[in-house]
Length: 326
Image (cartoon, rainbow, N blue to C red; front, side):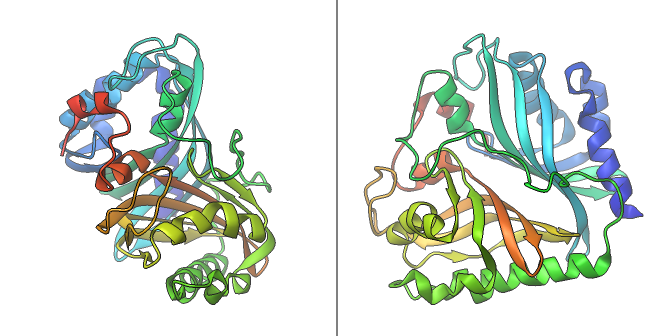
């Protein structure tokens, strides 16, 4: 029951996004809400600060903004109740935002969000946008062509990623167990030499689909994923590990996780044109998965690549620095 109520709360909050008043937004958040987000708005504290520095400027820049979620799930992690959502923002870009020039046209950019719910209020937010995609639509491309496919990223093949109905607990447990086995018994077992050392075929269908941020792109099938999505990352950060999840939940055949950071590794080779530094970096990431049968089929991934680049000594879009928080 709590999962249904929490999902309905988040859905209802954003269903009338264009007419959201500051008072309604503030009322949804706990007074001391903690926010962890994308660069340059990385850390905000308090409902007033969150509304005034993030949501009001965003809604002025995109007055007809619509949130189109394609995955919505809820469950608890380490005693805290979370709602996770992924989808697109779509709207008319009519006013400059974060130093990004408005183009007067309709744009779309991906979001991922985790909200911790306590006593009917949002007490913590983890929020990522594919900001390089938006900047590119404003004719200011800051990343080279993606390693993988570049496309309008679709929602789940099954079309069932958003539901307010209660999911079968056994299905949720099976999904979470598979995801955890894939991360800790697969991805984290990479021997820094051969991608086959991960044994990913134990966890993924051969016709898997992986959707990453602009710069990395999408991959269809395990072979394409290994070559064009994961390959550039493990070559550049061979000791990378999945760590630091603040939330890792599943509901039905869907699962989601986020960490701050979620991946830690040492920059040993070129990546996206960024030259190796030999320094350890930590990437803030959100993952959303769909299980099909006994294996994973789809994965949607958001990475704060602008913040990642800064850790490798590369400032992709200097205008953002004037809006840095936290």
